Amino acid sequence: MSRLKITLRVDFDSDHAIGPGKVALLEKMRDSGSLSQAARDLDMSYRRAWQLLASLNQTFREPLVLTATGGSGGGGTTLTEFGEAIVTAYRQFEKETNARAEKYFGSMLKTVSTQREGTRRSITRTQRSPATAAARRATSR
Image 1 (cartoon, rainbow, N blue to C red):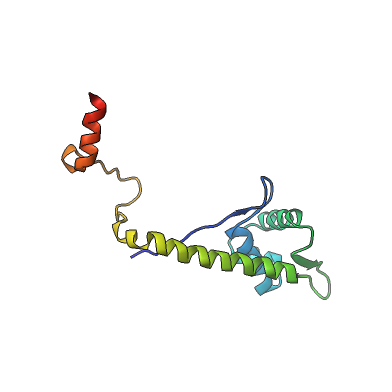
Image 2: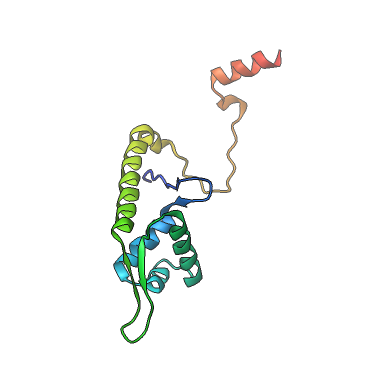
C-alpha cells in the first residue's frame, strides 16, 4: 500500500522559494562538502546545481553555504548555521505537514485506484450514486 506524501514548496514571495530540490542540494552539499559531488549524487548537472545555489543566495540576505575554490588544498562547501537552520525548518515543517495529511487523508488511502495512469475509468449510469442521479434529474427539468 502507498503512503501519503506531501511535497512542499515555500514561496517567500513571487520570486523567491525553497522546495525539495534546493533542500536536497543543501543536504548533499553538507554531507559531501562539494557542490559537484552533491550534483552527481542528485543526478543533476553541475550547471543546474549552481543555478539552484545562486537562487538560494538571492533569496536570503545571509549566505546558506560557504564555498572555497579548488587548488592544491581543494575546494569545498560548508553549510552556514543559517543554512542548517533552513534545512532543519524545512524538514520539520515537511514532517508535521505529512502527519497532518495522514490525519485528514489516511483513511482514504485504501480507496486510491490501483489502475495505471493513462487508463481511463468511466462511471456508467448504474454506478452513479442516488444523490448524483437525483441532482442530474433536477437540473435537466
